[in-house]
Every structure is written in structure tokens, then in C-alpha cells.
Length: 78
Image (cartoon, rainbow, N blue to C red; front, side):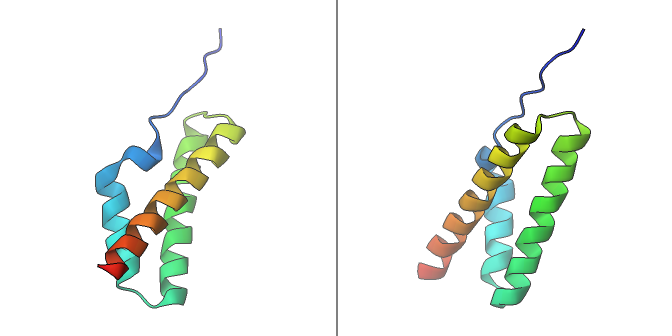
């Protein structure tokens, strides 16, 4: 028997998104890029370990990245 693992949308984890948007807003551009890349890698690996399909993982990571960057941009404009 096999089952599909459907993750809760990462971009809806508001605490996570807001926390990392705040962190990258306070960093220099290169450091912000490295921090975001590292966090996305950690989330990708966690999803892969849980058996989420690669296409779903890619979609979730892209969505998470867009959410963090969008909140970060809003914070920097405020």
C-alpha cells in the first residue's frame, strides 16, 4: 500500500514566514540571500524525508520563497 503525502502549504505558516522575512530584512543583501537559501534547503530536505513528491516539494519551496520575499519587501517599505 502506498499513500501520497500532502503537506500543509508552507507559505501559510505565517509565524515562520514573518520570522524569516524579518530576519532577512535586517541583513545585507548577500547575507539575506544566504539565509533564505539555507532556510529553503532545510525545508526542502524536511519535505523530502517525509516522502513528499519532488514536484510538490518544488512547488511548495517556490511558494514559500515568494511569501518570505513579499513580506520582507513590505516590511522594508514600511
